Image (cartoon, rainbow, N blue to C red; front, side, top):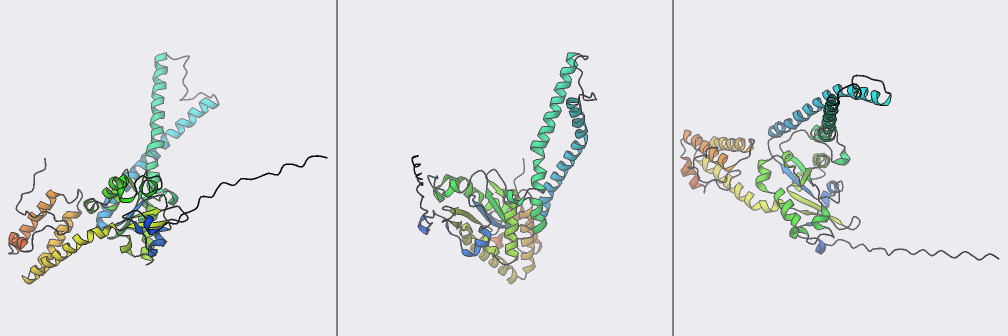
Length: 370
């Protein structure tokens, strides 16, 4: 009688219990994101850190800046197509010579020619191969990512502009590049949240008020942050359909805390830190306007606003030198209307605190550029 086969025993690995993310386990300065943002946050990657902000630069400035990469990528694409039209026949002849053994213009007869000539032809052809390889591997991805990159890979700028157009108020979504949730709030991070070195060296610099004021959102891409064009299209659509409020996407940082099943999206509404300075600026603007109105010079207020908006939106940023130059232009403009600009500025408490105007010394001459 044959022995019965031994009963197979299966040992199951212990299941790691999932710990739900609680408010106490969320590192500062983050807090649970409101449910109103779930339609937007549910479309984002849980392994990435995101920054959203509203760019209020004039639409015409955004169009002018965006036209530069459009023209550049069209030029690159034209160069690649021209190069392909001239080199594809060459490579077809070369392939026919190698595979079929049919001699043609690309065939090198090393037995009949001098060695110096053969070596020179080989070196020249190697340079051509290297140049074409660099075009395909390095240059060709630029127009591809600009015009055709898929939504799964973050979308592309042309699709974003096609659906969004150019607006005075645009939603921008930046995604962390080369790092993410694990480095900022993950289990492997020794310090989390505001104590993390990634928070101090990558998050905070990306939120700098001066940087956001001097650059449009399209120019904020760098080695640490990339624009998620697909997320920007989705966010704009949600705002247009009134599913998400535009103010809810003001300058904020989003990160998913915890594991994918029990974790939750968290937000740091860093725009609240700017509220105090913005309130003071609004009060000073009202004082500025009311005083000119009382003098019967309300039109001068609007001319001053137009001057500051124009100077602050020009390429190169609203630097200290440009602020001083703007104050000098305003001084001339006020005096042409019979208003002593220096006395007026002293009466309203100086120019400091007004949007884009951090310089109070209107008498300081503009520095000459070296």
